Amino acid sequence: MTQLDPRQDAFDPQSRFAEARLHVPLLADQPDIGWRFVAPQQITNGNRRLSLRLRPDAESPQVTEALAGEALERLWEENDWVRVRTVHDGYLGWAAREALGVFGEPTLDLQVTALRAHAFAGPKVSQPILAELSYGARVARGAGEVVEEQRRRWVPVVLPSGLEAWVQEICFAPLPEREMTAFALRFLETPYVWGGRSAWGLDCSGLTQLVCGAYGKALPRDADQQQEGLGKVETPQAGDLAFFEGHVGLMLDERRMIHANATHMRVTIETLGEGEYGARLAASCTGFGRLA
Image (cartoon, rainbow, N blue to C red; front, side, top):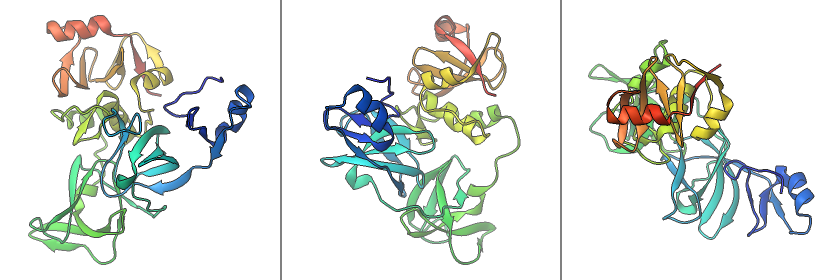
């Protein structure tokens, strides 16, 4: 079979489903397999982070997450599960059908820039919380004016599901025009979550993808994909990525690295070559990559 990446190329020899763009390579290698080709349906994730799993099984590992309001492609169903793709990085996973809201393609013109935020039922912090948001989540500007309350400014919004809510204006403030390492440091102590992509919990490549993406440097989802796409450098500097077997971190200078890791189960800073853990990291480093 033509070399395809199951993380990004949607095909399943058992169910015979495949996405339409793979029609030529699949028929060239397996003309008699009886493929059923489907065209992706554009949808938008709902108000919550959506867990995408390796297999259509609740006990299968999470491979990534879709944030609130992110664009998705819906491919095919298997029992109570749906094969979907995150549009921003082309990554595939299985989502529980009951958790997958199909909300079309609304205009979501506001992006959350706070690491973590909440949408409230009214313009007051004592109001019920309607949604848990994070950096990168998208909502729409609602009708009406900004409401000032105790020197706080509340913006009316419409969540991806169509629900009306309120979010403090500061949660949409532009990121400071500083180097991205300063932004990365804001994630210190964030819990480690396999497949996580938000400040509520993330993994190593989720951290580097979020941080680099915030400053216009789009990266693929996994560490090996990120390494493959970057130019190699011998001596790292601030903003370079450090790669290991199945792991990645962001260099703060020539030796210090910030990374989400399962050793400490959180985002920490290590100095390569210093201490037991730092020595192990230095010995296992497979190279450094520089963003264009």
